Image 1 (tube, rainbow, N blue to C red):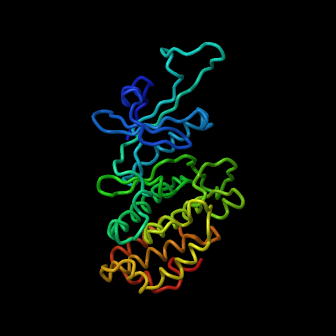
Image 2 (cartoon, one colour):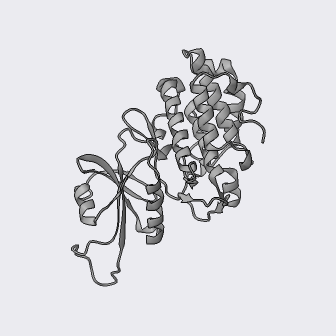
Image 3 (cartoon, rainbow, N blue to C red):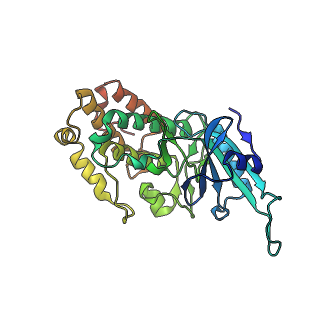
Length: 316
């Protein structure tokens, strides 16, 4: 799918003069708009984001590579000197390059607004659908030779459409890894730290497997309806231990989901096991995205063979 190169004037027309703000974060402001008769979300990057023109172009190239139903689609982009028609003070003025990304509009907001609390309130079928979609979206980034690392996978960066289909968004630090590259080091990140892997927190190492760790926390949070740490904490190992203690226990699962079928209970149990496997402290012990998608599909198809081995993905 070809992405449009948009001028600042077109961006202004799309957003009706930047009148409808629908989101704001460390990297910029998001406006709702309309382009070619369809609703879109336009992200204006802040100057303070420190994203150079070269880095912005790299970001666009990454976004162009992926076209998948579980990843927010890039419609167009703009990287242009500020509008020369605007009146600005000449004293101390400097050229400002304005950067915009125009995405499909996803109407149901972000995942963090709906997954916490009693898990039975949202319903297991919807939760399992969301888990499957996120796993497939991440595999679209990691697989097929792309090796694109997201680096900031957390519930606020998962959007939901009208059918509760999840779409991975906000590739704030996404990057492409070479075939033989295993990790990189990050020294300046605004990522959600409580979802980051231990090797990132301790050594600043970022890798494909770091995304898998974040995915594991997402899977467990979606399944349990519980947040991995409180708002005033960075991270706690107590969460993982509580999950191992409680959510691998079928009577506890039945208490939290009192009206599931036997297949439903197997799905919950399987997702907990997958999530815990993703949280291995050693990154090489974490499963890859293709294996995760395969196991989730097996669970969804009612396969009991998933549970016959002590280690869900086999020994390495």
